[in-house]
Amino acid sequence: MAPALIVFDLDGTLIDSRRDLADSANELIVCRGGRPLPEDAVTGMVGEGARTLIARAFGAAGLDASPDEALPAFLEIYGRRLFDHTRPYHGVPGMLREAAARAPVAVLTNKPQHPADRLVAHFGFDRFVQRVVGGDAGFPRKPSPDSLLALAREAGVPPARALLVGDSWIDHENAAAAGTRVCLARYGFGWERFDRARLRGDEWTIDAPRELAALIGTGP
Image 1: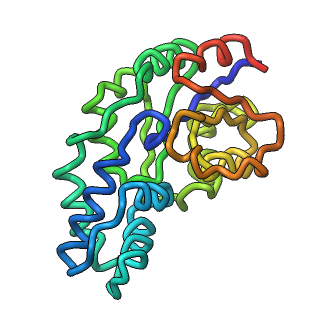
Image 2: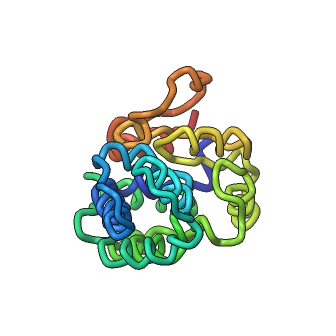
């Protein structure tokens, strides 16, 4: 059956935010007396929330500093850089339009709520997205199933009728824990570090946003 709820990850699925996240982390590192990290190194730290990103970046830069204490500074820096280089992947508006024509659409991200809301509005995704749930919205962060299950309950949809579209192992485990279908965006930067041994064989995959329409239009 075709999905009755479609939930999208944000970073690496709808937007390519690598450089702005790396530049923000490196500005914070330099402010604390460290040397900047390569963009690819920071990209590999993304996905489990801003605090985890800071902790990993400080560790890689050899800084002995508290990520909790540094979090407000990072969010201020990232808030200034949010749209410097971040762009939707080619075909994302069309993907969201097709999805919204078939089912309610939500965004579920470990990014804090405020920057997530700003990004969704800035790029016009809010024309199609009914709900945005950030990493500090009162649920445990992905891959905990709590937020995904809450979205399904709000939509009145059994988890098995929901589809999570994401690019990383976090999204893959999130869908498995919640009992939803999953579609893996192999164009996203999370896929670059995805352990293929995790695949069960029942996942959908897409190599470009435009490919999702054919999957959700026909169902499994």
